Length: 65
Image (tube, rainbow, N blue to C red; front, side, top):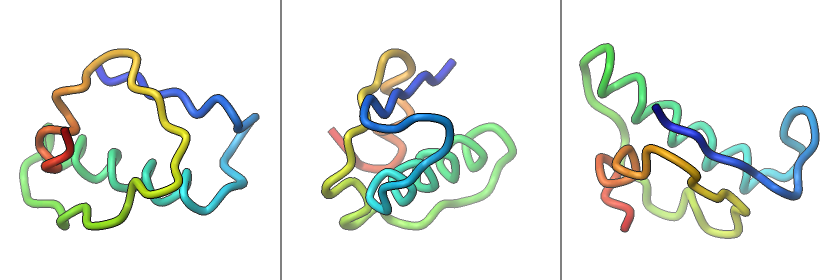
C-alpha cells in the first residue's frame, strides 16, 4: 500500500508542485504493478508538500531517498 498526504491541499490539487509529484508517484506505482518503465524524477518533488505515511519504498523506485 502507498499512502501519501498533501497537507496543504483539499479535494484535488491546486499547487503545481503537488500535481507534479503526485503524477511521478502514480507513474512509479503503475510501472511497478502493471509492468513497464517510468521517467526519471529529476526535479519533480521540488516544492511539493507530500508526506509519505505508508509505502515509502515506491519512492526508492524513483531514486528518491
